[in-house]
Length: 247
Ligand SMILES: C[S@@+](CC[C@H](N)C(=O)[O-])C[C@H]1O[C@@H](n2cnc3c(N)ncnc32)[C@H](O)[C@@H]1O
Image (cartoon, rainbow, N blue to C red):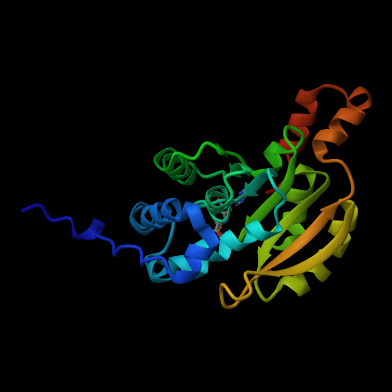
């Protein structure tokens, strides 16, 4: 008999009642993603085995409620997606969104591409890159992230990707307020408008998800490059300039 104990993983827990309300028609896709995370995600080391029992509350529902803050048909860039959190969950719960998952590590982008294919998601693209490598090439209505970097650094990585009038949405924990204070100068430098702390998923998850929302009052780096292209020169120069930034 073949021994395969090291690859055995406990199954994803059944979806809680709250998941039915949140995912509605897309619940079966969310369940399929939960299975992928519980098996392939754990085996490939993208998610810790101790996360399996709390996949729904701590990961899938925690991320899905971010959809409450997104306008219909928004373009979303999720930086540092890891195993697809929150970006892939948003693409499931809100099929009207167009979601770009930006993640530098090959092991993770390979998993994300397989997940997108297995779940048959037509509204997701996977980009293997660091966030700043995308600056000047794309812009989005919303840039999301969870557990990627302190807000100060996240602002440097995210704000150049947000279109004028769009939003940065950073999922944060209890440190959210302190991070906003610490990032004040950086946020100002990026032309941040209103900065709010949102609590999403009240009555669905406990504790609710805390999100820092930053409004972008300036054009994205794409707009900035376009408007200054004549003065600044060719795009290769712009590319090498952005590539040289520290991560
Ligand atoms: C702690 S993980 C969080 C993953 C996922 N967002 C989650 O909540 O489970 C941080 C992720 O950010 C990615 N990352 C690190 N530096 C990055 C950068 N400069 N641009 C984009 N992603 C980055 C890492 O590869 C990693 O997948």
